[in-house]
Length: 269
Length: 316
Image (cartoon, rainbow over all chains, first blue to last red; front, side):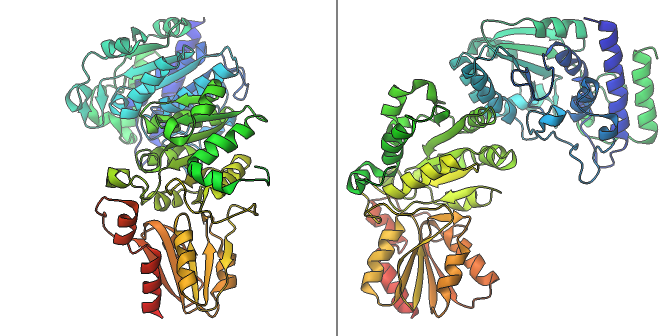
């Protein structure tokens, strides 16, 4: 795997995401997108998706749908969405707005926005792929705040019950949700232990290390597995990192310039 | 289902038993792409034989209606025809957002079969009555909403739903041995109401279990026209247009809240068309009835045939 290229791709995704954010006067989810940039980079590097409509493709189901700045820029790097199409982001009538809408032409599997619904949908997709004897994998990206939703636990219960070992769940564990720290809003304590008690093979990795993430994603298991990616909300943007304000905000003028500078500094550009 | 149907036998099985214990077993001889999902409600639905014969075509999701719908949507988008079965109160309310999201917004043509609808769970109380399901389902773009009047109609609605590419909500109601409205085979079409009795003064539009009450009431009154409006959405506006002229009143009857259901749908159309005919909506008004036997529940809502007759007489 060419990690130098992946690192460069990830940097370009971030700069493009900042550009998209800067055009949004409505506001946009920045924190939860920048915590997931490396996750998306690694996911699309590992997942086997020769074309977005190939029947036996791996499925990437993004349940934390508000991270479109990371998701859409990853689809752009993957070649499913053009730079021109990204320019329509959050303009009236565009198919690219604050949450993704299922459209296989662009590689979008699921209409997300209402938290918790992606993982439940993925249960059906994984079961269907098993019934069709596909040899593919189903990757599900969840936020840690999203884990508050009851349907997530119904889904986890059923994944083990139906032995859906084609499923890999990735938790973007950035430690924040809208109202603040996840530990303060709804402390879920010992996340790893919870997944393990359900029967998942569970690992914790550095969610900003493309090497660690690709390694974790590449391993398949006999039992469904969960990868808890330890991340930082709004990672790399100095004035937003680890703040609840970064969850949803605008990024215009000076702030945009500062954010670009921050990212470029990290990548020595 | 063949034209040689034993409607009395179906009536004994009830609406759900006729679908899952008779019709579906026949259908499965010809197709293998159907997957039935149930939220721990398969035995009351009449699915026991199906589960034994077709274990690969059945998924029990446990008492988790929301995940049942999500799982069905995933299967559906991967090419399977999915049918979700649960008590209609929990199916329509606990997982309303999931139905809106997956079947509405994502357009997955799932068939939702709500069993034990209306007041059928009697002494279980209001948590178990489904009185608002039709109103809720009607708001979802693209959703077909059908309330069959008897077991044969339930079977026909189910079989036709399997052939369409739309999401469908079937509200199954009535106790076992529910009255037979259609004694022999007949032409059923989703979205096409059926005139059962012709008459010049009163237009009764009913569905589900209330069709039999409407027919009883019509026998007591002269000049009453009775329409079985099994499909609430899409509403058969043509049959209303064809039969409303000259009528003194329109009376809608449903086993559910009057707010948002069949009566609302009819009233919306009649007022939009400026027919100037008074619409009286019979059903459960704005209250939770005291739990009890089925007749007791109907009585509190003014839904027995005698009460319907009296209401109409008072209006004329």
